[in-house]
Structure formats: structure tokens, C-alpha cells
Length: 318
Image (cartoon, rainbow, N blue to C red):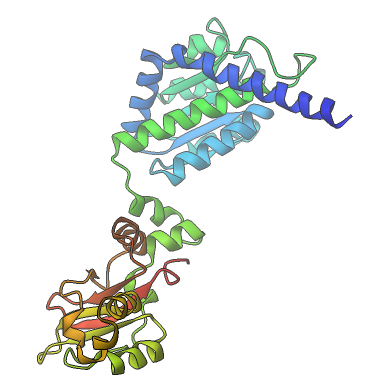
């Protein structure tokens, strides 16, 4: 029984994956023209559709809005019964219908044309009324639905959603959309927090493990251990960062010098140019520094190398 259920699920995924692959060669000039209309839109991108196409349209609108293209979903019935006033000639309408002949969707097309609102039609029928009356028509068709009866919208809605994503991604690239831009639209989510949080927000700044470079390593072990950050930072007479030792540096020094270990000082093993970041550095950038240099902590300093704090890899896990 379980094997049969798994096979049904796998077949559905295969069918929908094949439908997406078949869409790739269909993307052409009409797709580019549709994206250009969106890019040049001075108002908002209004996405509309009925039934399952409406659900897909709502998701496409949300994706567009969160990636730098102001957009919202409007139900065709609401538009026809009074909400047409929210659409202006500065907007672009993306109308989705698998058949391209959905009556509720076609009813307000003449009003849009009268207002000179560009219409991007998305359907599986290049000869449909929607295709004929759109400013540009993007054909999204599949050979068959993943539904065993070939009735329930499955592969066709997946394809429409994927083409909507393709439009959003193309717009992101054309706008040179950056992670910081994405964070502005997602301030409440975990991704937004990671993209907006800076070193100053997560750094340790009290009881920092500051040790003089002249301290003998025997004493340095105690200070590094008490600091609980696995490191000690040396400052010069002007309170600028002079060097850094880690518990790993201490272990390697003990192996190298053995009984002579206690005769050496911090300056003998410290890294004189440790990795430093500004307090305004985003934690995503700090994580990249840690991964690139295979380190677990970075020092936070101002432009003159004054120690302000320490960020470890746990602090980046917001």
C-alpha cells in the first residue's frame, strides 16, 4: 500500500517537473516584452485571476512585491463591481487564465483598454480572447495535468506559478536587487533580521578579555579561560588593537615549546593583524568572513582600531 502511495506522489512530481521543463523553450520575445512592461511600470502591477489561477496570482503578486516590484492581487469580481477605480493608467495588469476565455476575467478588459492600461495576458491558449485583447500574451501551456483525470489544475498552475517566479527573478536582476533591498521588505522575518542585524547589535562589549602583550603565557591561559570567548586581545598604549591570541594559539605554543612555554609572552604568539569589522557591518558579511578565513570570532573596532566588542559565531545565529 505504502509503495503504491509513494509511486503516485512520485509520478505527480515527475509530471509537473516535465511540464516545467517543457515551458523553457516557450519563453521568448513575449516574455521579455511582459517583463519590460513591468520594469517600466510607474504605478503598481495588478495581478488578477479566477479560482486556482487567482490563488496563483496572489502568490505571484506577493513575490513581486517582496522583490522590489510593487504589486497586489485583485479579484476579478471585485474589480467588475467597483474596484476598477484602484487601477490607473500608470499600472500594469497581469491577467491569468488557463483557458484564456474566463468570462469573469474578460468582463472588465474593455474598461482597462479604455483607460489605456497595459494588459499582460497569461494563458495556455494563444487564440483565446485574453490573448487577442492583451497588450502582450505569455503562453503557459502544458501537455496534460498531473491529475489522473486530466481535469484538476495541477501541472498548469505549477507552470503559471513558475513563469510568475521567472518574471520576478528577471525583474530582480534588471533592478540589481540586493540582499539589503530584500531585507527592507522582510523586516519581521528571520531572513530580514539576519540581513538587517549589525555587529553592534550582537557583539560582546562588556568585560572584554584584554591582556597586555607583555603578559607571560602562563597568566594568559587564566585570562583567556576567564573571558569565556576563547581569546585574548592586546591593545597598545593608545588603546588600539595590537594583536590577538586564541586558545588554539596557546595549545600550539605548548606543543612547540613544552617546558619553555612559560618563558614566552603573548607578543610571541599573537596574530598582529586579526580580522576586524566595523560596528555597522551586517552579520551576513561577518559570517562570510568567518567562513572564508575559518575562524569563529571577529573583533569589532572603529576606523582607528579601537576595540569596541567581539562577535562570535553564536552571535550570528539570529
